[in-house]
Image 1 (cartoon, one colour):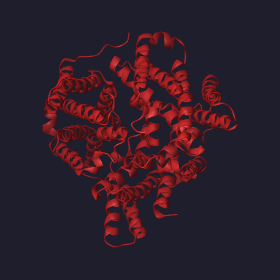
Image 2 (image 1 turned 180 degrees about the vertical axis):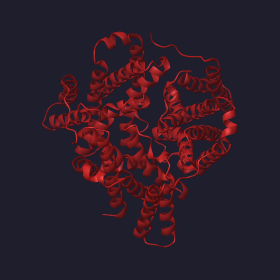
Image 3 (image 1 turned 180 degrees about the horizontal axis):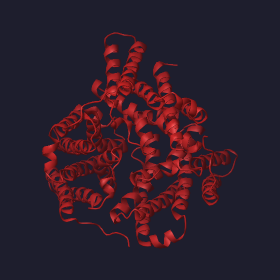
Image 4 (image 1 turned 45 degrees about the vertical axis):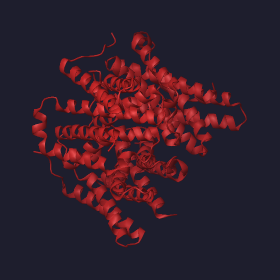
Length: 200
Length: 200
Length: 200
């Protein structure tokens, strides 16, 4: 199992769990929970593969993605009380998914010969994509438009990954640093209320 | 005219009519009605063709789709009072569209060599897709997230179609059974208020 | 620099500026402004390229698009007070973007051998697409569903372009007439409150 695949599945799992928790909060039934888990878990990667022209998308070619998202949905349905007790769990799960998909989105875009700038942009799109699909379906303000440096964190993760790999680090090390950068910035921003400037 | 094409047009028509009725309820003008009819009628099939990589999508290659959706929009504009008098007509039309697209989505995905699981998933996506586009544009809670076993009905239709065809029934019979299964389950769920379990 | 590219960039700029102004109105921070500017500026063209199967989309192949959208976002962030003082600026910018993308969407679809009807439809989709993405993310009623003949103006621009070019006018003249037709109809409709008929 190569690393991009493992990171994709990890991102799918945590995004799907965030979708399940949001669905529970909205008091959707078990089918609605599965729908929102699968949409959040598979949405970002599907948007990435569509834009790269790699069709059908990975998430349809390999059933591991769907099973991972459904498992996360089931876990969310069964253990939501426990998960919710860990405060801010929804946004922390989302932050992890953002990191995984920002890095794998950037890596797969570079493999497809996009420029570095376009690859990092597509990393942001695939990182934010699953969450946007989730939030639109549930009619929430998309996290990516709220404060707390969401898109910047995704951009940072992609940039750290590219810089580390071009700087000679092993692929796995660079990817892990990238995920950590996105996740770390998001969690710190949530914890300390960091915000980007607003217009006067 | 092959069967998948006929079912596609039937699904386009009923989804477009559901879009037109929703647009009338929102008091959109005739152009908004046409936009919502076309979006609902063509959306699910376009999403399916994009994910299968069959581009440009059928709905752009063959003008029958657009004309069907516009005809449905015009009928919705002209006869909405009569249509609305048939109670629950909006959700019944939507249920028929869900059945047609769930089955043709599954069938076309199998033709494109997707696995059975992926084909049924894409059937659900193409069945639900047009309705999601319609509901998001009109800022309604997507039907697929409301109760009444929406996604399950689409899944059932795809599964019944695959089982019936693999079991040796003729393509047309299997497809009709699949559409009937989705439509029947949805209409019964609406009629009797069937709901999936909710988390405690 | 060919004309379609120039018109694409012009459309990207004005749509991105409309996104930035909407983001300022919603009191998003500078990152949210950049996200909404880029989504509005690149969304319509990406949807067009996805449906044409021209992947990765232009907006990822050529960094001029991203830089143009980010520049518009920065201008929106810095000068929103001045821009807002020009009344109705948001919808006027949107009208210009609609015209540019309706015409380039139609032109690129004809290049891809779509029929005239499908090409004009895809012109409407790519013209309206960026605005729909923008409005959905900001949770506004999409302009395309509001009154004031929005979709009709996009359709008119595509049709005028096709008629003028088939009638023997130079490509640049035909394209400019098409953009002018869309923009003119929209601005007149906004100014004089023109509306399409509504159902009784």
